[in-house]
Structure formats: C-alpha cells, structure tokens
Length: 265
Image (cartoon, rainbow, N blue to C red; front, top):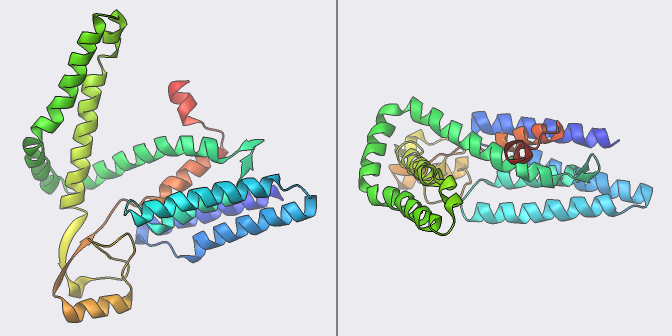
C-alpha cells in the first residue's frame, strides 16, 4: 500500500514540473490533490492500524512546510504552486526507508535548487546574451566597490588571523569564492531586470502573466479585460520555472542520493 502513495507523489510532481516548465502555471487541482490524498491516506493508515505516528509526521511536516512556503509566496519569493507542491510531497511521504523523508529531501533540495537556478540563469543569459552582456558590464562597473570590498576584507582577515594560527591561510579560496558569489548575484539581478521584467502592450497580455508589482499570481481573463480598458501598457515579470526542482529532488532522494554527504562527507 505504501508504494501507491509514493508512485502518486512522483507522478503528481512530474506533471506539476512539466506543466510549470512549459506554461508557468500549475493547475491548483494537482497540488491540492497531493495534499488531500496525503492526509487521507495516512489518516486511513492510522484508523486501520491504530498507529498515529505516520499520520502525525505527515500532518506536522506538511503543515510546517506549507506555512513556510506560503509565507515566502506572500513575500514574493516564489509562486503559490511551489509552496503547495513541496507541502504535498511532505504530506504524501512522511517516512522512507525507516526515517523521516523530509530531512534528506531538504538537504538534497538545497543543492538541486542552487545548481538548477545557476544553469537556468546561464541558459537564459545565453539566449539573450547581447542584452545581458551589456547590462552586466554596466552593473559591474556601477557596483565595483560592492564586488571588491568583501573579497579584500576576507583576504585581510585571513592574513591577520594567520599571525595567530598559520592554518588560516589554508582558507585563501574564501576570497575569490566570495567574488564569484557576488558576480553571480549581480548576474541574477541583471537577468531579472533585463529579461524577466519587460513593458508590453495590454493587447499582448496572456492569461497567467504576472504584473511586476504583484505577488506571483497570474492574471485571469477578466483582469486582462479590465486592464485593456484602463491601460495601454503594463510591466510584467517572469521568473525561473522552479517546480521541476521539487520533482528532481524527489527522484534523487527516493533513489537514495544524499548530495550533502556526497559533497562534504
């Protein structure tokens, strides 16, 4: 019986990921069904076996992640579908191979999300290389002090620390690594401002487009009709199709991968 809920979780997350990747909008019914089926499945398990543990873990981890996810959604950090899909996975798979599933899942999620975002941004940048290259050059020149001060400060701190502990210089790579992180940060901001944000005619608006000042929720056909009668142009924003990260992480975790231990173990 346990295999059924795992298969359903995998199928639902794959469908959600593909839908998000190609349309930017995940139908509400899919993540809602994930959450509902997870709660009902483990409630049935509790009533049939008398063991409330799995139901408790499902309810606690799922609700906790849903709350945190919706908070991020309200802060404009990601879409509502991201919050519901993540929670749905937690509700559906509370344990796996005798341990709480969400713990290795979240560790894998950090690395998968980081790699996915970097690759996605690089691909988008390559597709719009002329605009991005020009924007990045201007941004780096404008923020040169922000980029150089942290690496220099780290290097000076290591040199000073080496007077007390010679092994401190073994961490010299922290200075150039901080520079790489800062450049990636500015690159991401350039992508956001030059590619993911654009002013368009209201005649070109499509269902699912997101206004720049709105949280991540797409426009409905009724809202588009109202905008067409009141405005000629609006600024819309796009973003990284993030739901596939949950799918990739789910598959890797179910296959037994622990990226944290593989990298730092």
